[in-house]
Length: 257
Image (cartoon, rainbow, N blue to C red):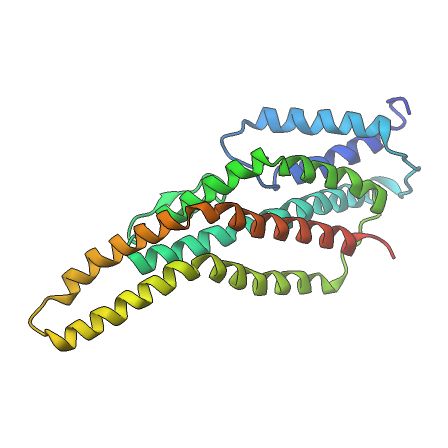
């Protein structure tokens, strides 16, 4: 197909979906990436798609009909990026629980991915998983997924059924399960420390268990984090699997049956 004034509306609809995905997807939506780079990348992918994917004629009535198609494409792209991105928030939740257990919850830093104030451990896990996302080429998988979505969801054919909320409900369940799997080693170690401190408080009440407990929890927490740092690939595997599953599910929900 040749890009002319007659079929420019099809090219514009492709740009809208791709831009909605790029501005909400993990890694691509980072604030430190310039807006011009995001826009140029979206146009570049859209040009390739325009000449490669099979495109059928679109039907609409007047300007309002075309505006509805634009809104539908923007929502479809944004939903695909959003549902693949929200799995990243599991790390912030798990990191906050870990830091609350070992006593680092009073220190907050800005997470460049989620753009919220998170704790030190949450930031550590976030950077490590983001680095593994680049190393494992998961961003290539995300781009391929949104490109393949045109085979499932034609231009202007996305639907938004009322039962879409069920996907978010299922994610919230996985949110807590995956976060607790990440937290469990530190949580178990700190539980043992609290039990020991409780016994010592009964045996030697003259000792200041509060001052001892603060230092002991920090020491044990850092020791456990050092011991389980090799399990970061498993943590990333949990997050990546959840990202891919959510992305596949939301694409399947928006297609016409």
